[in-house]
Image 1 (cartoon, rainbow, N blue to C red):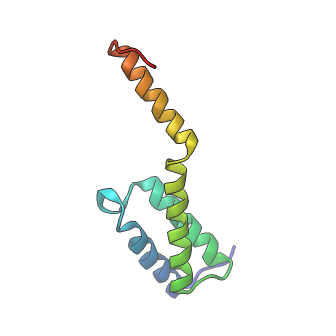
Image 2: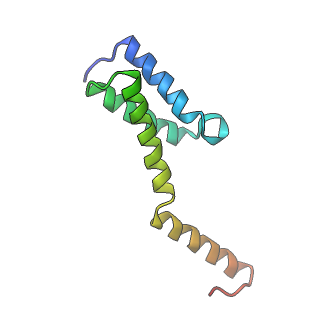
Length: 94
């Protein structure tokens, strides 16, 4: 395991805060922040330690999470939830 220097750690911290700032709940939920942080650590250990490089990694990680939450599988789960709700409330499901 490669030890990260203080400057790299500071860059990762700045990027994490910057990337997550646009998320709801004052910077997103724990799982989202953890995923982005893990991606930043992986990149830094591979030598990507510049602020700009880490910023790209962080934004890409956030985009991956966003795409996953709107994937067809996630949409299918939402549709099933709506159908179950309608059944419970006595509505017909088409």
